[in-house]
Picture 1: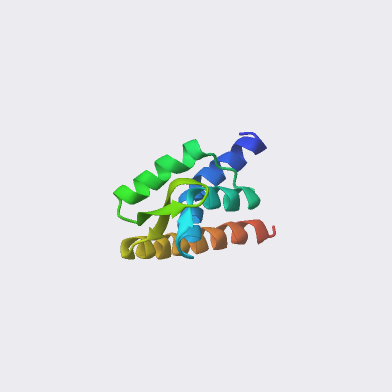
Picture 2: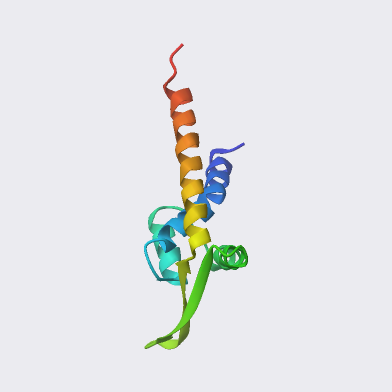
Length: 110
């Protein structure tokens, strides 16, 4: 596996966790999610994000509301549901476990 492929696979695995984390801070517009992910070097395009948001909505982890925009048509703003908050907590615990395990392996000396 190439380094680029490795990075891509890790990012794909973390995207749901990162998107839920961003939404957990309060109402957020899709473009804002994309910009934050890009700033964090977790590059995502709309074609990746919209299906994920639809899946999160279907799983009842997020809800959205339409809000008028001064710059065009109404926009969807996403928020976490109670189930989404619980799911995010579980993902966070999983991340801590994986992070600890990897650090333990990296820091093990022969």
